[in-house]
Length: 439
Image 1 (cartoon, one colour):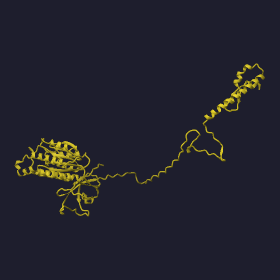
Image 2 (tube, one colour):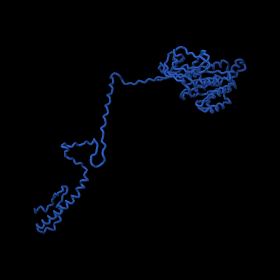
Image 3 (cartoon, one colour):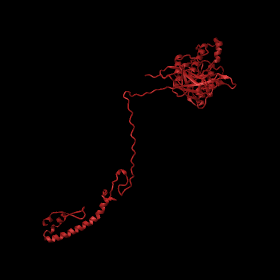
Image 4 (cartoon, helix red, strand yellow):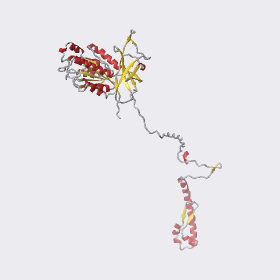
């Protein structure tokens, strides 16, 4: 062993994790090189014992610390009741150690049912989609007696609608009692004092029938149309607009241009609209012809025109005294009796085409009752809707005919309080223009 002392060696201690190198001691004992080997062995044995005691002391302190720092689970091969212990999978949840919070067990999600297989596509049928636009025609119908009294209580079975002679199936039926949206279009030009006064009297009579829920606009025309007040629910604003009509301007009365402009503006307003046209029926200088305004009236939807003629007394006087009424309609405007009759016919046509009614009062006292009838007509109407059997969108004009019959299909009989049969009057528009699509 004499030569082994010169080389440093590792000596295993009781704790396998601690080793002590003798190299440090060998290097530190070079001062004893002159001593005998026996004394060196004795001294080395004592140093070795001291090192063992120190190692045991350090081991007793480090071992608990190492046990606390160790977090790796120790797999035990112990058996429980003679059976091997089964390892719990991590997906089951639960605590994984004796330190830390409990883990919430995870539930296995139910497997969603498999989606149904897609339908098999036929080989000979190509992919395409079919879209059909079915128009709906609305027809407002007024059913009154010959005296203008509204007839209530009618049902869908009492109406028959024919389009170009072909019966149609009514799909919707309602009785409308709603606020009105109307334009008061008044002729006010430098024509005749009587015409102007009666036009204002008729306009004020209409304004008196308005309710707070109604929307009304006021427009007058001579050579051009002029908007006095736009749609408003303020009755005072309507009276204020009529109060401005005191001094006339031009003597021209361009009825066709003014009516076309009014209908064109009403196209932008949704819902049912009415035009209360107070006029003599004379058109003197319009750019549009009668055919063009007639086409505009046909193409306009959801608008009903109620013309009211003025100047009946002057017309009757001029008919008896033709020489004294050369300028009855204005200075330099030759208008005769036939011109007034032609104007009356045009007003009846406008009313019939839109489902309205033309009135020709003779005296001022007739105006309140007349506008009372108009107010009752436009506030109490039967509205019929149907899908036409002719589904072509060709832009053609189609004539309508509405009849009121008894439930058994025979003629409807209406009796008054005395039990006498009363004739009824059915007012509806004569036709409509179908939509036109361009391929």
